[in-house]
Structures are given as C-alpha cells and as structure tokens.
Image (cartoon, rainbow, N blue to C red; front, side, top):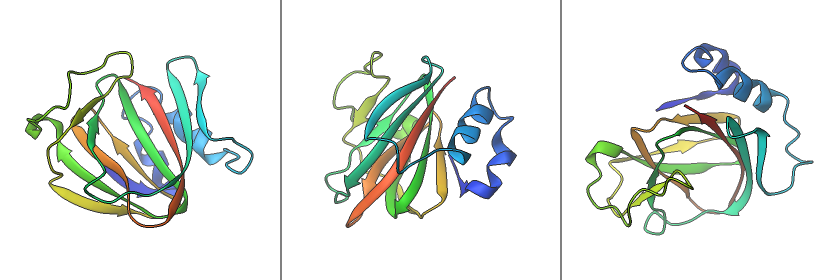
Amino acid sequence: MIIDRMENAGRYVSLTPGLAAAFELLRNFDFDATPDGPAEIDGEKLTINMLRRDLKTKDAAKLEAHERYIDIQYVYRGNEEFGWRLTSDCVQPQAPYNPEKDVILFDDEPEAYFPLLENMFVLFFPEDAHAPMVGEGKVEKLVVKVLL
C-alpha cells in the first residue's frame, strides 16, 4: 500500500506497467464532467469508476481485496477513511474469490484505519485488503484499476 499526494505520483510510475498512464489520466481528468459509474479507458488494462457517495460507518464497511488489479483511489472532494489489513491475514471470507469482478470480501476486522484527504491517493496491491468509504458526509473520488 502507498499513500501520497498527487504531486508525488511520478515517484511510483515505474513500479508496474500501467501506472504511468493511470497517473497521467488522474492529472488531466475532468471530474466535474464525468458521470458516476464505471468506464473502460484502455480495455481491461485501465478502467475507472467515478463515485459520489455517502460514507459508511466502520461496521458497515467490509474489507475487500483484488488479485488481478491495483486499485488507485483518489479523493477529489471530501475526506474518507479506509480500513486496512494484509490479505494473507484475512481468514473470514464472505464467499470465494469472484474472478469476474476480481474481488473477495472478508468479515475480518481491519488492523488499522487511515484518512485520505483531498488530492491524495492510495495504491492498493493484491496483498492489501481494504475497507473503503468510511466516515461521515460525502466523498467524490475516482477509482482507477490497473491490470497487473
């Protein structure tokens, strides 16, 4: 997991193919003109999901993990909190991994929580189970999925 501000995104583009394109997209993205929902940018290699949502309580947020994609979650407006736990430490799956949606949900409790403020992003790798959308109020964010 990596947490940082957009002005430092260039430090991470060499970590895996696709991150350079993902951060370029974020730098030039027109958030206000984009409707809610998912969209393909470069086939399955790079997809987005624009979210404008009410935040949830810690109890309502479930840990999720992905095997095929890195999640970049970028907060455009508002603030959000995330729960986190190593995927390998999660022992209570709600159901088997869903390869079509590239997700597995867990009933385990997060090991830690951290805030994500406006103009910040978090990169979640397959080893990072995360419980997003925690807090009070609303958040506007873009989730960018980068195929591994």
